[in-house]
Image (cartoon, rainbow, N blue to C red):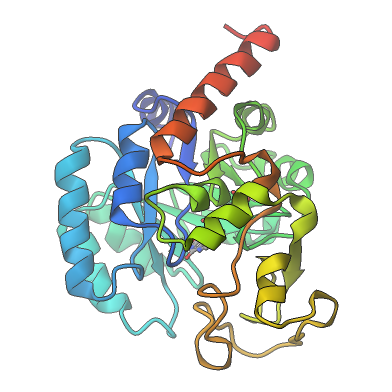
Length: 312
Ligand SMILES: Cc1cc2nc3c(=O)[nH]c(=O)nc-3n(C[C@H](O)[C@H](O)[C@H](O)COP(=O)(O)O)c2cc1C
């Protein structure tokens, strides 16, 4: 995407923010609420329990949000048995933005783009970002340390400095962004859009248990621990949920290699469902309620931050 196209995308938003898709938690209702409130809404294709349910959900989202951009996250990995069928649905509705996770390939990127979608890919290091640029993606999501879900472990300052040096296209920053001030800070670091996940876990529309929502409201960065023991790659988890499941945060299982188990199935069926993931930014989340209320507050806080910095 060139700078004009990026400006055109941003002009359709109330805030320079995209919601990060969250396994189990993001629902079609959440996507609709996010889009209606003026940010880019998103959800993983795997959240509806079948491809037919995904079809129904996207039909409802597309009809309700009309021209507002929304995103669907596809796990482009051989372990995802629904990939081909879900891809058909994404192509059928010409989903405006597709966020690819894992093992993206150039053919898939080109197929989606030829069908009218923008393709974004998340990365945790500059080397991955360069690979994505070679594949021809439209947007790169830089996931810094402290992010919810599968996290990066590089400071957002370092990651943004390295990627922005050579990438002039659409760049999103992910990890711990929860206030309007932080959205502005992401822009100052060179991001076009801030990418926000964990605060939406406390939204009414999120498919999260009441105890999960409360942990987000009560929690701070000190309640988050990074472990690769559940999925094979580093992810951030809520320490109170580990304890509730009888696990000792100081002695978590460790993996030294092997296959990535993205949905925590098999031995680790509890990961994501009962052992809850969130990022270090949750200290800024003070209440649970409709996503619209949080986005309204975010917009007001962003305006305050701009004013405080003397930006019109
Ligand atoms: C519970 C949870 C589940 C997630 N699941 C996914 C997922 O299925 N696909 C994906 O691309 N990112 C996933 N993420 C990452 C988010 O999209 C986003 O990058 C991240 O939440 C941003 O960091 P933050 O939570 O600190 O705002 C997940 C994050 C959380 C907290």
